[in-house]
Amino acid sequence: MKNRFLSILLANAVLSIVALSLARISAGQSAGAEKVEGRQGAERVLHHQKAEVEKAIQALHATLKGRLPILDGFANDVDEPWDRFARGYYECAVRVVAQGQNETLVHITAKISAWYTDANPAKSGYRELVSNGRVEADLLDRIEESFAPPGQTSTPSQTRPARESKPESPFPPNSASLPPNANATPNIDTPTFARGGLNSSSRSSPSASRIAPPSSLEDIESLKRRREEADRHLGELNSDVQNLEEILRNQTHPTDIAVVRKSGTRVMVKPGASGPSLFSAESEDEFQVLDSGPDWVHVQISGASRGWIRQSDLIMPEGRSENSSNAGPAAAPAAETSFRVVREETNEFKGKWEPLSGKRVKIIWAGAASMATKPATGAVKRHFAKSIFITAYREISTRDPASAGVVIVFDSADGGQVAATVESLKQWQMGNLSDASFWLQCSVDPPDFFDP
Image 1 (cartoon, rainbow, N blue to C red):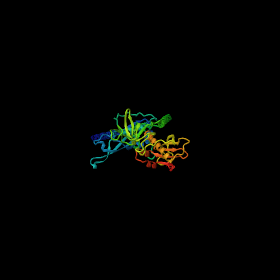
Image 2: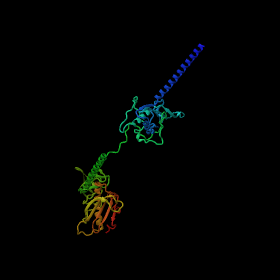
Image 3: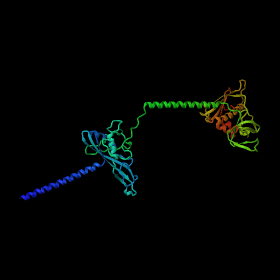
Image 4: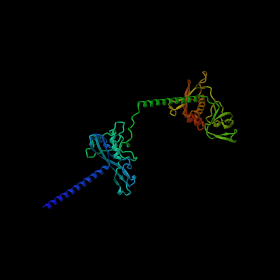
């Protein structure tokens, strides 16, 4: 009986030892599992109450998931090339555990996925990648920074191992710029997980500063002063330009300059078409007239160099006689004594003639040469207008190319107005228009102004 009792006690002891061993093994496995889980993601102890931490995470709920700009730097290395992965996406799970009155543990785990394109389309598809901890660490930084006073950067409560330089964080630099969504309040009760969404338009660098505020009043006033100085300087330059233009228009021009009518005009060594030529002159080239004969004009080329040009190929200066039988259709007539030029100016044409209306023109006023002068005939008026047109065109073509035409105003009892465009004057002087054709292209007001 005694032996049986001892056997029973021995059996119970063995069973107790086995049970205790099994319990220890189970406990060890459970502890090992928690340790493995603790190594996944990232965690940090914050010196704030749990309610405050939950409120901060709620304000950042929009950053808990979204797209990644790139995968390299956020996920662990894979065997396949990174350029085969696209449309990277992350989603964070947050666990909050109170460890004391003013201490809260925040644990974050990030799940990363991306579309993988394989050479074999059948093997293409979404793949889950292992986070390298960058997403979790950056989100912890954002949570802790939310407790820092404005304008200051919070120092992490717990130092983590140094990380290599990686791409910019997917989280925006300032959580205050992301308004919380009242209809998407995350659940942060222990041990459940909080989730949210990332605004795709948020900025990427956690260390980037806020958008700079508008310039101060001092900066604005400085810009205004600089603008006023620039406008004043521009006004001074415009005034100088106008003064120079006025001086150029009013300066005394040489009265012995002949102008070449058309390009290719030959400058001869001696008067005569059969002799050798020096060169070919271009249209509107100018030469000083030394002497002129019935057919040829002796001109100065440069310095002591001289040459001869056929008179019909030149627009002779006013007062120089030309051979009427050999002169071109636009040869300058002798000056008439019935009229004289009273004044000249360059201004906008106020008349209604369409070719010159609203354009810059050279305006010449002509008055009677003397009080005793009898009313001029139409032929005399036309002759005087012809001489003025030739002289004015020579000045415009060489010194005032911006003018669009010439207007002659006869200021007398039987006065009138004659206008011509620069293009008509050019064609006329080049010999492409006869006198009759030229006058038809002019504006004559009244129409019978040149009648006998």
